[in-house]
Amino acid sequence: MNIVVLIKQVPEIELVKVDEAANSVVLPSGPGVVNPFDEFAVEEGLRLREKHGGKVTVLTVGSERAESALRDCLALGVDAAYLITDPLFDKSDPQAVGRILAAGLRKLGEYDLIIAGKQAVDDDSAQVPGAVAAFLDVPQAMFVKKVEAVDGGKAKLLRTTEEGYDVVEVTLPMVMSVVKEINEPRLPSLKGKMMAKKTPITKWSAADIGLDGALVGANSLTKVVKVSPPPPRQQGEMISGETPEEIAEKLYQKLKDKQAL
Ligand SMILES: Cc1cc2nc3c(=O)[nH]c(=O)nc-3n(C[C@H](O)[C@H](O)[C@H](O)COP(=O)(O)OP(=O)(O)OC[C@H]3O[C@@H](n4cnc5c(N)ncnc54)[C@H](O)[C@@H]3O)c2cc1C
Image 1 (cartoon, rainbow, N blue to C red):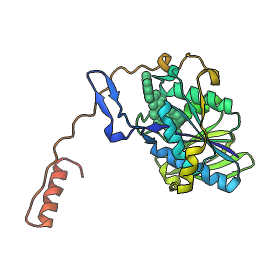
Image 2: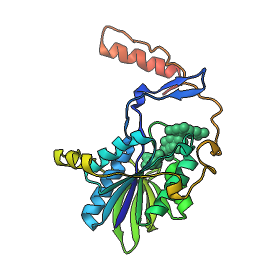
Image 3: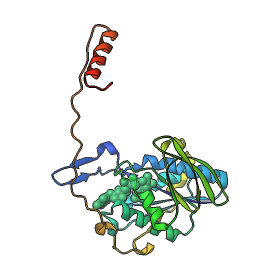
Image 4: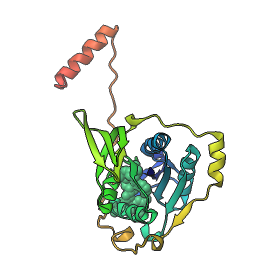
């Protein structure tokens, strides 16, 4: 089975700042990390390969810096890594990123299962996996918490809903996004880390995947109108009292007064 995992390099989220005057998000200069939800996607790919055989490939759209995120995945045991990078892709909105990834997947040619994280922790749009499925014209299942079976060209999946979960059967090739309940990601071994340093990473430009600037990069259809930080948190209140019972009683009254009970 050919499994492709879509991974995004994200900045260390607590270092991200909003510059309201410049209407922009200021990212830290460090290399960043693999989007935490994508670690579950990589792990699921590796487990499915262990069960069914085949190959796990990781694919990302990003700057040259994203190479380090791909190497982190190679250290975990994925077979191949691809970086799609081109200045033409700067300022891509999530639909454009979906378009670029779909073009890369078409060039890759072999995919049965495309696995993504449920969302990236920096931009949080949760749109990319659905966009990739739409551009490839393949089915999708989002927020998957368990892969029950993959057999006969179909995957049986449990996908999380607000009320519980749905059991769905989806024809391959397909795109799924996964939630963190799906597994517990492994840690890299020393041998894996050494191998990852030596494994070549294939880099593709816009021309390599047959794209010009149309509908991607600065020609994305979304424009950011305003960026603002969340309002500062209001000061909390300490409730004091002689005994825990007294404190609990005061808390109870306050919640009741606010009609929170
Ligand atoms: C108008 C506009 C301009 C923007 N300009 C820029 C810019 O100049 N530079 C910039 O860095 N960002 C820019 N962004 C943000 C960028 O569009 C998003 O980071 C990107 O589309 C992914 O969206 P997300 O992080 O919300 O992904 P989600 O949809 O939340 O991610 C879900 C999953 O999709 C997969 N995925 C997401 N992104 C990628 C990727 N790049 N490669 C592989 N897999 C991926 C991962 O598996 C991830 O877990 C811009 C956004 C807008 C709206």
